[in-house]
Structure formats: C-alpha cells, structure tokens
Length: 415
Ligand SMILES: [Fe+2]
Image 1 (cartoon, rainbow, N blue to C red):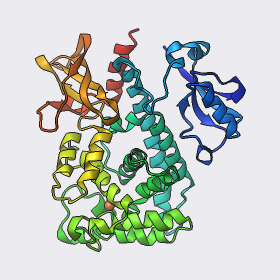
Image 2 (image 1 turned 180 degrees about the vertical axis):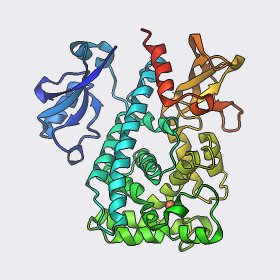
Image 3 (image 1 turned 90 degrees about the horizontal axis):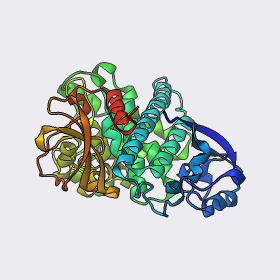
Image 4 (image 1 turned 60 degrees about the horizontal axis):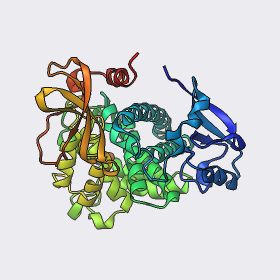
C-alpha cells in the first residue's frame, strides 16, 4: 500500500514533480501563493531561492520516493489555477480521499485551538490568537493547493452541534470565499480569524440555552440575541488590531439582515462590513447543513435553495450564488441515485472550478445498498437546481465516514 512521508530537502535538491508541503519560513512573508504546491517547472524552484528559502518539506511516496519526480504526469502539469485540471475522475477520487483527511485534521486542530480561546474568554482573560492564526494559515494553504477541498466539507459533517466545529467550518468557507473573490492576500487571515471568532459572545450565554434541544422560548431568544454585542465587548478589548477591529465588527454585525430585519441594531445589508455580509450567508449555510440534537442537517442543495430564495433570512443573493459555485449545489462526495436504482458518489464535474456541468459519478452500491461487484463510473448530465435527483448523505445509507473512505479506497486500490 502506498504511504506518504515528509522529508526536509535543501532547495538545491528539489526537483520538478515534487510536492512541497512546507517552507523554512512563514509563506505569508513571501511572494508565494502557498506553502503547498507541486513543483511544475524550474521557475518554481528559482522563486523559492528568490524568496530566501533554503529548505522545504516535501511529501514523497515512501515506497517509491525517487520515481515521484520522474513521473511524466507530474512533470507535465501545465500552469493552471486548478491543480487537478489534468486528472481523470478516478484520480480525483484519490484526491477527494486525501482532502477529506486534510479537512478532518484541520477541523480537529482548529476546534482544539478554539476551545482554548473560548475558555479564556469565559474566564474573562485575553484570548490567545497565535494558534488560531496558524490554523487559518494552514487552511489557506490547503485551499490554494486544492480548491475542491471546500466542496467536500459536507461529507465530513458528522453528528456535531458544537459552536467550535461550526466556527471552524465557517472559517473554511470564509477563507475559501475570500480567495475566490480575489480579496487581497494580506486580508485572508483577518477574514479567517473574524470567522473563527464571530460567535465569541456565546461564551457568555448560559449552557442550558445554548444547548437546549429544541426551540427557544421568547425569553431565551432574547438572551441568545445578546451574543453579537457580548462578542463585540470581548473582542474590542483584544490587543491584536485585527481582532479588536475587524473581528469585533463582524461579531456584532453577523446577525444583521436586509432592510434592517436583523439584530442587534437593525442595520441594512448596505451598512455592514463586506466580511459580515459574506459571513452571514456562510454562517447560515453551515448551521443549516449541520446536524443538531433535534434535527438532521439539511442537504446542501436545500440549504442553498433556501439562501437563494431569500427565505426567512434576508441575505445577499449574490453571495449565496457564489457559495453555490464554491461548494457545488451537489457537492463532491454527495451520494446520488442513478438509473436502475444503483447509488454512486459524485467525484468530479466538467466545470471543476464551479462544481457544475456534467458530473462523474462512481457507482458502487446496489439498490439494496450493498457494494457492487463491478463498480463503474457514469457521467450524469448537468444537474440544475430544480431537477429532482435522489441524493443521500453517507449517514442516510448507514455508512460511517470511515466506511465511505474504505469503499472508495478498495475500488481505486484493489489489494
Ligand atoms: Fe451568531
């Protein structure tokens, strides 16, 4: 079985085709777009030297590290903003697996960092942001190396209802959105930190209200609705300027809505900061698609439809449209019923950048939900939002995330 390992190399020993996953300095202080990338040409190596980088961490195939660099597939990757544009759907399957793992690790680490920060806030102490910043940097690196990772977020939604997981996922969506919108690179981290801290005020809400399994009554709602202002109060005291300014502003504004229908001030959408305007859409999407104690998460296409139609929550429809392209109306990893009742998993789209167009589906379960002896890849025509497709989350099929991973792995890597 192929195993990846990480080795530190001098830039002089770096070769075209190698995958760089770390640098000997913070990549944000360099002119590089990411600290994770495939070396496509000698120019990439030269760029590292120009930035004063002497060593890099390279991910290599443990069993065959030499041939990695010689693989013509790696050598011939053209300049393209989409790192996977040349890969067939089958290889995208492997990339999906890797991304699921990367996002899960990232989510776990971010949750740990957030728990520490929120705990400090509960104790009335200044919140440490160093680790949060590191996680946002890590996220940006993953998203630049694989813009499709974000579409797989829905796959890793398991039974979690915590503010921490919600904030970590919202950060992933927010940084992804900032990158897609071509927001200047030096602002990505502030966007990510603002997303991580937007619900900081919830540290001051009694646990019985926060975790109530069901609808809040009027009095409880009133208390809950104080969290934007409470968050603002905490974040304004932070010594870091980006927390004290942008994150505090976003915390107080993220429940404002169109025509002043939100709270706490009833400002219109035109009166709030662009980060707040984006975050409110991503925040609602994340909350709707997550499981709660009292209900299962909505399917992504239903959550997107709700946001596009304006629903009860009046948000900016142009951001909802952009979200639908970023994650896909039917995200990668969605299980879908195909002709004959078999069930497959969406691995790829003809318009990869926007997760739409014809879909490549790996059909691997029978109508009885048993693994097929001969799995196959089928192409489905473009799935417009109004089209009826029977889709499932893996938990609807009684499959754990681990089982999904091993099903895909078995098909791509028969032993
Ligand atoms: Fe909130």
